[in-house]
Image 1 (cartoon, rainbow, N blue to C red):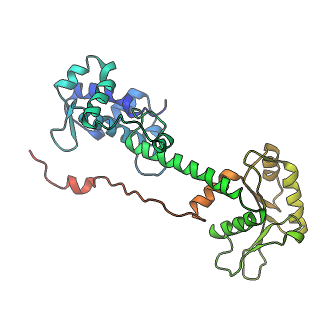
Image 2 (cartoon, one colour):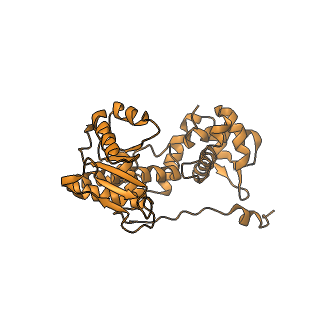
Length: 309
């Protein structure tokens, strides 16, 4: 099964504490993974950022919410124990989530204020299912997607020539052409022969990447015929490396054709979504709006201190 959300972990955590007494966070992992039938891969699955194990983090937040709601006590740092309120509420486990929400509202009376439009855009999943860390990742992902759309819409307001210059700059930004002076070239419209741009890979220009850039509406499809024409232009230019870049997307036939070319020609297709991602990731025409630094306890530092007996 899928890794359970932190709200689904709360009651099993309470049941374990009621049975075993005081427990450390790591003590919950094995029995809870068995309870939910998780595989080793699921237990060890990391966040996309690589910053922590998902299941471990969700167990941690389940414990935090239970503690904030006054259902668990922490007799020592890193130790958890169910208290009388928790034991009493455990008799009606279906009421646990509602009780926690009510207690958190008392602690944070502004929690239920109407969300702004921006908050609704960036956090569109149930607050009871996601940990704060997961909400942050979800918000970041949604913000990126909205910027991707803005990038493509902005490109569509520019001229075809401006787009050709943009894709040449992007490939240079990605490292193609290296430190070679004037490694990128936008071909003249009157005599481009189906080639919109060229990247020189070496000083002598012996290695070249030829580019075709199509500034199409986002919902337009580029078919096999256009890819075949570009491959023909590569042959005329005696080039075996091509990049076809568009703001739209490729048909299934176009993708299959590009993938099945013989080894003498290497052709890369970049659609609108990939283009926007590259522009964002490589910072072409972008600026950092805000940097958020998130810290966590250094376990080695704190564990080196003597615990209160």
